[in-house]
Image 1: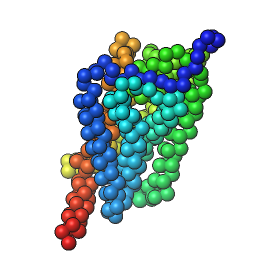
Image 2: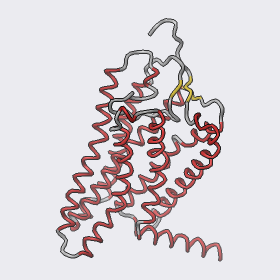
Image 3: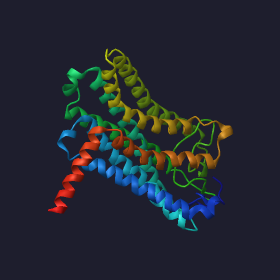
Length: 320
């Protein structure tokens, strides 16, 4: 670090500055999506009050809904403010806080999706032992392990990042403090602003990120291979359809989550640009959390019935 460089105390997001005329429209679109996402996940939380849904599957779903609300809230409100502000700055401390929350929730979601896949595996492949293998204590342990893994791993990574000295213009080619690395590309917008050589640390951090993101993915794949084999052995078409329907919502959510994550990680250098980074980031920070409650409410008969009962009870109370 040369002596004539001054340390950054603030970062400036480039954000959607190239779309200056469309920023008010983007504000309305993202605000609508944000409010819809929060409302959809709150509905799932209210449904947890239905005793018939006090099962492992819905226990994990409530965890996922809470996580999604925190996940989208860590990014979108600040993005909305910056869409209306001329100067899009953030202090180093606030950037660190955002990265802590965002990265912890991202890895925790990977682990929760793996726990949900295990739940479906036990339900379909070992139905007679389901209540024993997935009792409340086991579910609680899986949820605690998911959250603990996210907190420990990502806290260590983010803490390392913000022990670095930052200097230069402080301009970040993004709309939030992202922590997602890419193959063959610049690893992170924030780390690029460091005044010291971080190449060796970046390799280690990249390897850890891939390990802890791909391990849950492999567990999910293994679970669904076993599930598929079991479903194909069911003699009746009705039985196969019913068994598959219990997994369809989770498969869609996993496909959305890992589809965008893998696209981000495996993006070739030729296709890499700040614009594609922002478009991909919008998928996993805004679109995916918005679609998850829709998938679980519209494609799940039990959830729809529980929601209808809650609505009827609320209407009846208002009338009386």
